[in-house]
Length: 435
Image (cartoon, rainbow, N blue to C red; front, top):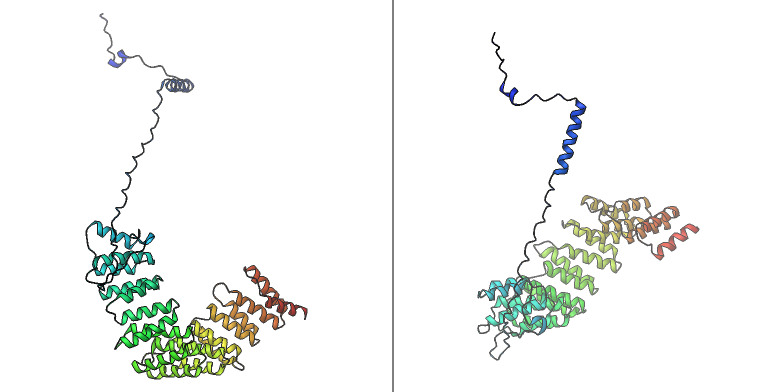
């Protein structure tokens, strides 16, 4: 018989079957292959750091632009010669930068730009630089009145009263705002006699002065009268005010303060009654508080309480200043403990019992009346950190009441709070301990 061969698959003829390995040999062969690959692998290239960007080009320096250096001639135009040194060139901040940019762009600034720059000036040197720039533009026509007023105000606000007066004297035309600004500048700068002299000139040269600038000038001159004890001049201003518009608002408060500082409490009370019954607007709280403080200073405690009653009946809102003033009166007045408790209730109603000034007044009032429990409650109700006055008052109240243990405890708590008791407090506590 002929022999026939059995056909085999093509894959079987190409490669021989791989022998089956045990798991141990398979693991050994895998480890050997990994070791071979690790020995023959190429190293990875090192990472390169990114290159630094090139430095920016240097900034160009500011162009040194010329500043006009015109001086005052005989034609009466307002020009100011710039000072040397720091004020010889435009300032490098604020107004100076704006003017330098406008000059570089060949854009002439108008009046509103100058007024805005003068409003934002921080010192007299900056005002002087803007003034020099203004003088170069308005050399022929002269300064407009609103711009000149703003220039006077800018110098006065920066404390250069001499420069403000120089601009004021060079102005060919002045209005009420100009005079009121200069009078207020003298008063704020403590040149009180100059303020009074300028106010006299203002009354002779300006006719029909009214408005807010009139109020500012009257308030400034009354403040100067109070500082230099010019009561007679203040009385003349009082007559002038009554003739013009009457005593109301801030003018009445300043006039009342003048009489209180001069000891003329009857005149001050008369001014208060005029403000109360002849003015449509309510009397400011400052006027009531000034008269209460003056009565307390002179020991006229009953009149001080009557003034506070009139204030409450007029519907004036009481703040911490008026309440603390009347509490000091109640602390020294005899047989007024009930009224002091009513003031305490009013403070609670208005949410001011935790105020430091009101709480200190309540503490003093209850301590002097011997009500130590109420004094302790007022002390604990003070919002925030009590000051040294409150601590000393509480310790002295306990010491004078014979409670030496509580007084000593308050002294130690005061030291723990970072404050030292006064010598009077320590002497009172020592005496209480030796009793």
